[in-house]
Amino acid sequence: MNLRRQFQLTLYKLKKDFGAPISIIYATTSTVNLETGATTVDESSFKIAKAIVLGNKETRAAIYDLTFLAANKNFVYGGLFDKTTRVLVVDNRDLPSGYTPTLDHRCILEDERYQFKSIEKTVPSAGWLITCVKLGNQTTENVITIPVENRMDTSHGTSG
Image 1 (cartoon, rainbow, N blue to C red):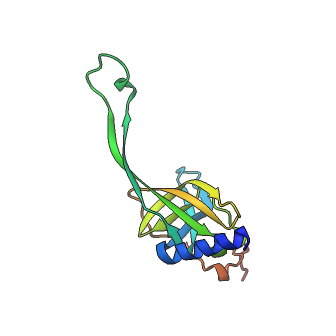
Image 2 (cartoon, rainbow, N blue to C red):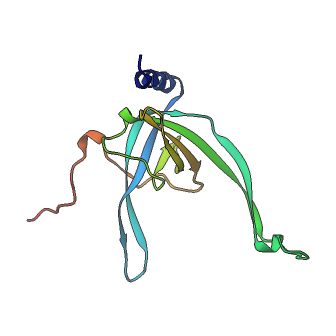
């Protein structure tokens, strides 16, 4: 049995045991209002029925102002926050043809948004290993979901 086939069988077994539905979100267009400077970003998404979701890693991080490093300062700015990291394994067969994940893309997993932090291609090019970080206080609505089978070019307007 070749390596690629064995890897696909392993992905299938892991999807069966650790699979969860996710939606991958990507920006389609962005427009800038020249008067106000406000940027409007239109997003689209597609669903993956089962992506392999590994356990989450939750860490507490701290950010300090420069005064923390300086000597003899009485007041320090800074704060603590919790950071949640997840690892996803996505099978190439579940992705639309021609799609390549980038660090600008996000996903919705268990009704929470995650930003892609690192992306690695698996050895026999059968899938992607994606590390993502939870985005706090991000809304999950206002995303247009496009079925992979029904994609059509909407850039041309209609007349009449």
